Length: 341
Image (cartoon, one colour):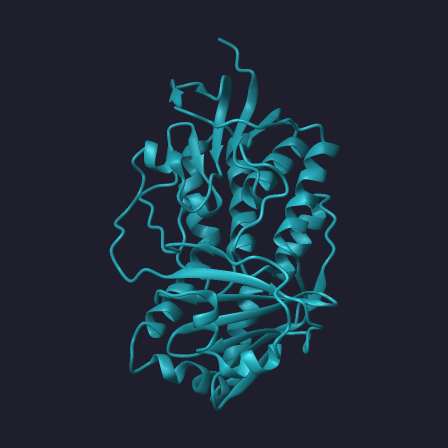
């Protein structure tokens, strides 16, 4: 039996779209299956690292947004900046990012089918899903991936449950940095995404509304100064997603579906792009069995740094010392930030 395409991609978010674009540029035939209408929004910080912006540019994805030049940590008594050395990141509305990805898919004549993937079957040589047969399937179907569940690749779900809430405010950015406010409740990320718009994403394990969580960050609330909300509140979580393996035969997980530690370091898109490149390289070589090791190799540093920071964040004695430590050791702080940029 001959396949309909080389690669079937489940999900047209950043990870899925990047896989499809890179595969098409490598000469593979690709179809994307995405039941949601474009542009797709998501509760995320919307700050894209310089490395990710550069990679998207190489894929031919044209982005518009507001540059940011570093990360600022703040608590009630401290403030410390880490400026990027490689180049600025870009604050981009998630809907703007997705529209740019969809435009690039269209320019490459990659079909995006508005349907659900449904049950997946496979043989040693082929994968069948959504009415199509392919040589491989890339599962980029998100944090709570149904495909990951279908193939029983989910790991232990124990541990503290953290979630994120995001809302935009109509106000001119007061800095060209992404600010991270720390409090007992959690963290609030402020990303400039336009000349008159900032996004605020709050990460916490506490239950409550966005407004009630914002009260835990009085300095940020004063900065916003009663600015009108420019979007509805969106939520995501639980953030931690443990995964036993990234492959099941000819099905390969990528992006959030492949596992997620936390949004604490804001590296989700950058890691998704790096691992999507490895996935396509493995498929071009017809060696899907190499993907697990490749995924671990290119994501280990981010996973380690995020897990370490999260571990400290979850220790009552250490959490209040994170920002003071960054202020006391600014060189170390800058090095870590730039390793992640």
